[in-house]
Image (cartoon, rainbow, N blue to C red; front, side, top):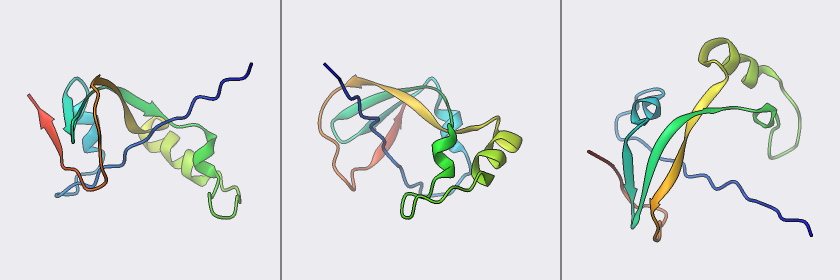
Length: 96
């Protein structure tokens, strides 16, 4: 039997654009719709960021840039604390 695990992602739009603000959320909880997640670490990027999803061309410069300036990190990991429904357009709020 083969089991496929998807990698769920949520992209948040910030009101005031602060580069890499998500790194300050580590150790904090975020509520989105009915769901509460806890941010626990930076996300190390793999080589998939080098592939253009529209035409599958490969350009190694994104990962090289992340490696040189961000220790190859971009984004954060979070685990679900309270389950529920999240809808497009729901407001995300930092808790405590």
